[in-house]
Amino acid sequence: MVDDAHSGISQSAWNDALALWKYHQLNHELRPCSVIIGLGSHDLGVATRASELYLQGYAPLIVFTGANSPTTIERFPRGEAVHYMEHAVELGVPRSAILLETRATNTAENLRYSRAVLEDAGKKISSVLLVTKPYEQRRSLGTSMKIWPEVDVVCASEQVGLGEYIDSIGSRKKVLDMLVGTLQRLIEYPKQGFIVGQEVPTEVANAYERLRDAGFDSRVIRRK
Image (cartoon, rainbow, N blue to C red):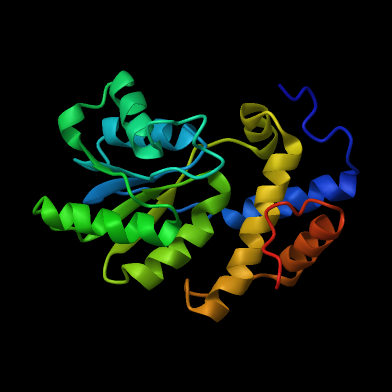
């Protein structure tokens, strides 16, 4: 547990982290959709939020998607999607309302393979309620616009502040590293054709550079 989320770093660095945290979230207004898709990761909060939204009636079906990565294999040895499903059932979601996609290892595959699972199940999808980690909303939207442009996408995640999220993960550096790494991908991936580009305000780009240069960089892609 992190007693003081921003102890040990300067107030300016904390403010920079908050700038990235807020930028990554889209604050979409929730509305009923054809399906909820929960993107696999190390964060079980994605499954919790997807379950809440299902139980509140936002969609008749959930797809949990995700295999494993080096950061999730120990936490979710049976695969991200499987552990998400088990958690959702514990929270009251009927197993019959959940489809599993267990091959994806990145966001593009999450969406591409989930689409295939839904097609195989005979489901016609016009809108997706996409549930992600809080700092992955914007990148997930950009990916969906590239991979699945014909559906209407609403993004959602756990409704927590940065300090509370750091407490849940247990490492301030890990979370700030991920904020920085995700922002870098928002800048670089459109150039590579992976996602649809989105405007990054100057103050957000500057905050990213300061945090990266301060050593919050374990998730930064290194140029070869």
